[in-house]
Image 1 (cartoon, helix red, strand yellow):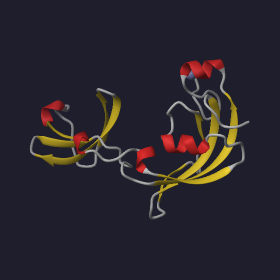
Image 2 (tube, rainbow, N blue to C red):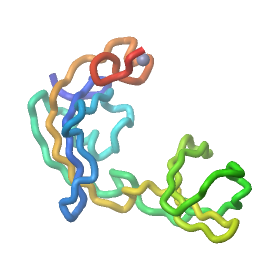
Image 3 (cartoon, rainbow, N blue to C red):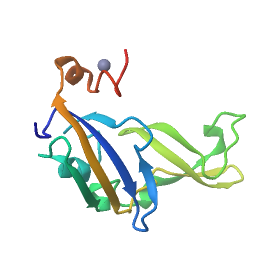
Image 4 (cartoon, rainbow, N blue to C red):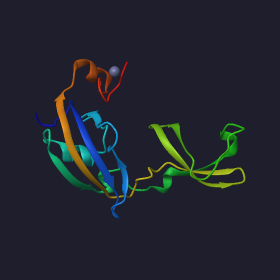
Length: 160
Ligand code: ZN
């Protein structure tokens, strides 16, 4: 069976940067399970996987435009400390999720100056070319229930 929209795909993967450093890997964990063609993965990786079958291995380099995007200074904003919980300890490097106009977004604190807190909404991997080694472990049809829920059930998936 080939990988196509709405197939449940199981992959082992390793992600490296241009220097060959490992940024993320499924090694030592369960494979990553996802419903293909629904934006669960970055666009470049979904494209590369399209048409592949179980046991295929691929190495692919993905430009930022098809990865986590290009850095945008518009995603950087300075807010007043009063926006945070009174007792919160705000430090550079902290990350948290915030509800924004276009959904949940990961924000990173990049500067703290008195009551001014500068937040960066760019993905930490924006502007980066991503090098993936992928091993396709399994491809199967999604069940009607999985498609309805938008996530994978069973081993390596949602247990509910
Ligand atoms: Zn479910």
